[in-house]
Image (cartoon, rainbow, N blue to C red; front, side, top):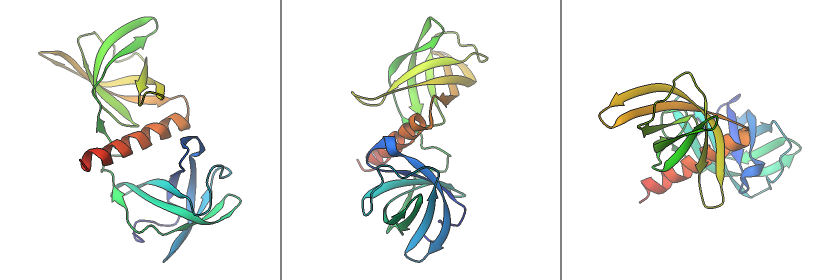
Length: 195
């Protein structure tokens, strides 16, 4: 694990409450801890309470759980995690996500069936005519209580016998919404692999 965590690595820390997600940079690495300098005050991050950590390494997206041994303002001393896992080699974890949804171009609603999503974007199929130059609005239901609305920009359109398969990227209204999708996909990926 020590060879994966290095100085100047950017890390996202997500406590139990999503809303208090924060980002920071590793400033020091020791055998049993590393120092993390946060971008914002550590609201909702408590000493000895486990949080989720995500960082992009040369081997892929690294995920682990750990806790703050000490909190001094925006500087946290984080216990070295006992274990870790790579979510995948892509920048963001991609999961199967099959739902019938509406994609909006202004007032025009297009019927789509999503195939997969990640914090980077999604793939879906449709019989509708999609303009690759347009931007679309979509609301993604993640649970009974939680929906995320964002902008979708098509990147690739493939015509097939059943209509079109479209891949594209998301633009989020806030980093908070993006973090929710990252965590949702990571958790679903782990649940699917553990079935």
